Length: 55
Image 1: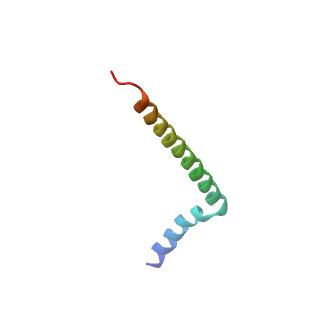
Image 2: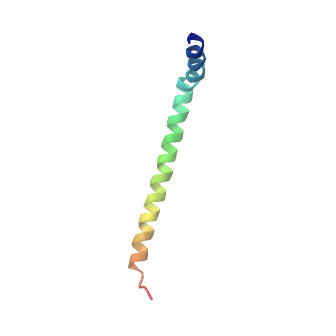
Image 3: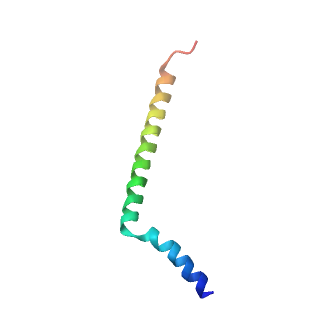
């Protein structure tokens, strides 16, 4: 049992290094900005479509 805990820890620890955490946060922020921009564009598209006369 101890061996498996040791293996799991060695697999998890690299993810917790400050450098990787910083990179992860940067990527998460960038992804959030992209998603926000896409949603804003979709919303503005919906507004324009509803203003256009429908034939």
